Image 1 (cartoon, rainbow, N blue to C red):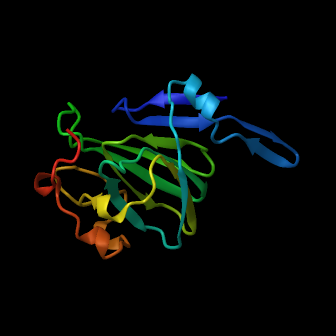
Image 2: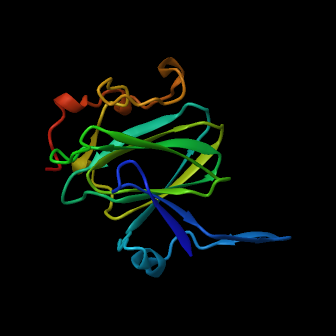
Length: 185
């Protein structure tokens, strides 16, 4: 049992699995091929990824992979809280260059489905935040690309001063949208 909500960009979905709790804690089916297929989301996940980000303000992204290793992602938080962002980079899309930002936390139990054709990233809003995400294609270094997290054309409010963000060297060097090759037409 899960609740599926459209976002401002309908291809990006908020998915909230049902939680069953009692005096022992809770149980939740966070992924079910059948439940997702019944909701019109027929995805074949092939890999699970997990990250731990110690400091508040750790920003990972904006990342995507090109064909033939383009990935749908199903993102959730098991500890802490993030602002999860999906940017439409499908050149022919009416929402090209626009983004969706959704708060995911261990408490709200929401997941974000980021489809192929979107750059994805998140910033941690609590210390020691753990993020798990499923992907529909394996990691392929030759197809790994990024988009500048601070591109003014995107207008992303990361909720923290940019000077307070912790990024990898790689994530500081991605091109802006206007400079990026068009991988998804």
